[in-house]
Length: 392
Ligand SMILES: *[C@@H]1O[C@H](CO)[C@@H](O)[C@H](O)[C@H]1NC(C)=O
Ligand SMILES: *[C@@H]1O[C@H](CO)[C@@H](O)[C@H](O)[C@H]1NC(C)=O
Image 1 (cartoon, helix red, strand yellow):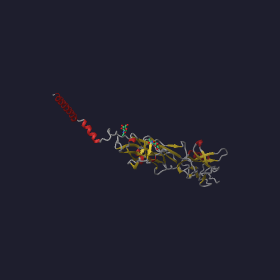
Image 2 (cartoon, protein in one colour; image 1 turned 60 degrees about the horizontal axis):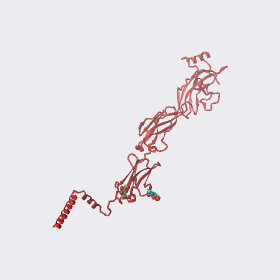
Image 3 (cartoon, helix red, strand yellow; image 1 turned 90 degrees about the vertical axis):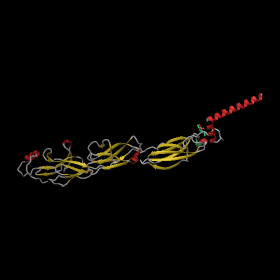
Image 4 (spheres, protein in one colour; image 1 turned 45 degrees about the vertical axis):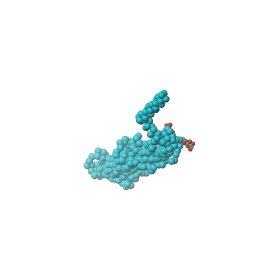
């Protein structure tokens, strides 16, 4: 190894002293360790190049690279020794100690240090200013997950957004529902300790409403490595379940005349998602006579199903229970019932309805009573006349 010799006339101890005191104007020949990079930002997986130059006369001995400061520092490279992941940029150079290294660099302060070979233990006679290495890694595209199965509206449903592999640690997560910001707690970033890269998970509680069939949830992440925020979306329809509201009615309205035809209608309203099946039961027995109209979509994205069942109001059917049963989205069935009530037949069979009505109104008329009274008076007068005649 060739050695630069001191030429300035300064003795070596003086030179060393000047180096430690960093006296300016010590001359161009002064021994110096130059670490021109104050900070370096490197993408994960990229090769990190750390630069260190020696100027001026240097004593015999290697230049070493350390990570960190103080007693916790770690030797990352020396010409002597095996450092498989590090190579010298200019092999064997006495002035250029630049190294290429580290497929997995750590975020840390790196320093080159000049060691002087001495008879006793090696002596460190100079150190570069240090290079602060930041490993930059972009977060993965965020992914949003919802509840495992459909959730009913009202209670708050939890959604989770995850992203990983980013560095530095700072990341901003924003939740949006249909573009409007939602309040959410701070994201959880792991690991807690210093690491090459980090993962985050953020949760938000969303109260679903039946109208959310068309709503979209967005998880937006911002990171220093990103030019534009990344988005993960979730269609709330995937998490929404709204059970149907049932309504059963009859036409004509109860009570129904005997042997008349009556139509039961069932409305299953405002449900989501759309898979639903409707069946009719008569006294608990399934009947296949119901007619369903096509599924209708409501403006809010929910659905309505309607079915009618026509039956004849026979005497055996009086007080029969007609039930509309709906199975929605593989949930337990919901049902609503209506009883068939058939009115009492006319009291005197064979007699016409209109006549009986007329009779009734006649009985309630005062004229009838006056007529009957007059008839009795006339009968009595006639009987009295007959009696008086027989006496003569
Ligand atoms: C239901 O159906 C069964 C068999 O079809 C029948 O035996 C039973 O009487 C029915 N019950 C009613 C209440 O209609
Ligand atoms: C049906 O039942 C109701 C109550 O039991 C009764 O008042 C009515 O007369 C019945 N109708 C017929 C047609 O039997």
